[in-house]
Amino acid sequence: MKSKAPKVSIKDVAQAAGVSIASVSRAMNEGTGNVSEATRQKVEKAIAELNYRPNWIGKALRGHSNNTFAMIISSIQNNFFSAVAWEIERRLNDEGAAMLLFNSNENMQLQDRCLEEIRSRQVAGVFMLCAVDSPNLKELAEHTPVILINRQIDDLPDLPFVGIDDRSAASELAKAIMRENDGPIALIHGPQTSNTSRARLDGFRSEFEREGRAILPENMIEAELSMESGYACAVHLMNTAKTPYSAIVCGNDQIAYGAYRRCRELGLNVPQDTAIYGFDDNPLNHWLAPWLNTVSVPHVRYAEEAVERMKRLVNGQTVENAILPYDIILRR
Image (cartoon, rainbow, N blue to C red; front, side):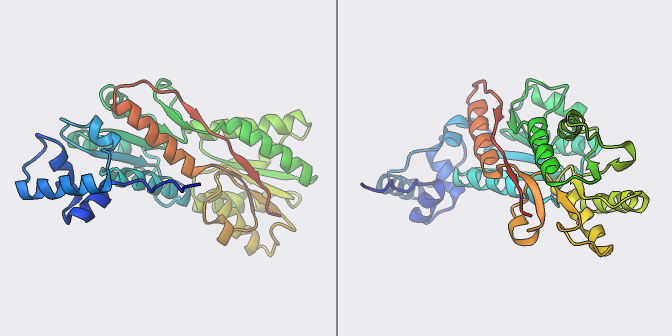
């Protein structure tokens, strides 16, 4: 059987022609900028020799003033989010497009300022990785393709979404937790302002209550989606706990890292003394956090599905949500 020929990208054409990617783009698209006849001939020769087929971005944006996309990420410090952003940018770069990256820090006002800058640049489309609800997002979505990733917005139910069923995943993880732990359980959940955090909290609580093991209010606390907040919340819970926890359930892996630090400070072995459960499965967990049980969210699939849906939106098509599969990772 013959192996499938590798896909030729605009980058390959640029290298073969000895010119920049921008020059290749201009040579292929009339009206997008001046290019010398010599450069045009080099590009056409490389295209013919490599049997290059113009990508979807080039076709969709012909006549458009910009082949740049933008992404707003809620926290660049979260390695899971960074991995998703990198995968999306890599795919756009392979197609000859660029991506601007903005960090919102889970702040509505900062996100709106980012959106104002994005609007001034007239980008072709916007990826929102864990967006917060804000006035400028509603306005931008009326005339610019927008894809929501990992978090839906209650007031914008029609925006395409790429993610998992967080409630179902939390419920499934709760079942695994109860199978492995019969002692007291603590829950450090994410902020209630987040649709995703609410879904996870609901899944956890509902499953524990269904099995007659409801988590007591004094064993539950809300955290920001960061290591620092996870640590502070773990300090509070473990300082006030009447008996040691057999497990600490966290709203995401970042929170779990903070809880782990507190356990180590107290001389507890993880997971032998206290098991810790997170959510997302940061790609670095395999190397740096072999103690962490978590829900593995497919970050590569997130990127694939988000870019594919952006392709359709840019071409004027309607798209459906992509609800992707997940895995429960038990490392203890």
